[in-house]
Length: 172
Image (tube, rainbow, N blue to C red):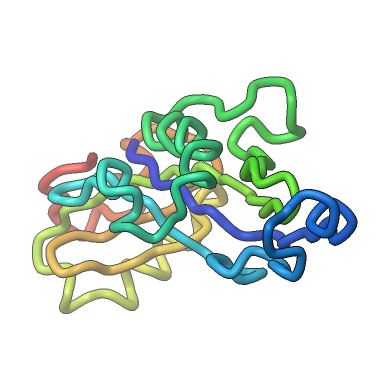
């Protein structure tokens, strides 16, 4: 099983009273770096290693300092915040800007990578067969492989059985 991490900006807060009292520019406003609803996807499969490049520079240093440990944990397949949130795959965190914090949802996404011979000719049939499995929430076709997003891990034999018409070369 492989893991991605999706980071969503839930909202940006503003404590105007603190800005007026403590900042050199009391009209700084909300964080200009992020937008509400903005999403970032971190991967570490194949040649991708987004964590080590801070999402290719897509995060400010203050926010990265606060959320990077959760992203790293998710990419390793770990429980982001065991027994703290109602789903161990999700964490709510914020940056440490005291006058304009940004609230993030950090979510581990579990998936498997299927290398299926000649899959490009049979995408629709493969997608239909995989969608019949209750733990699969999405099927994404890439250049050389197929990704299936899963709710919880299950045996590769189940995949092989439902795709018995096809030659599965490897499952990661």
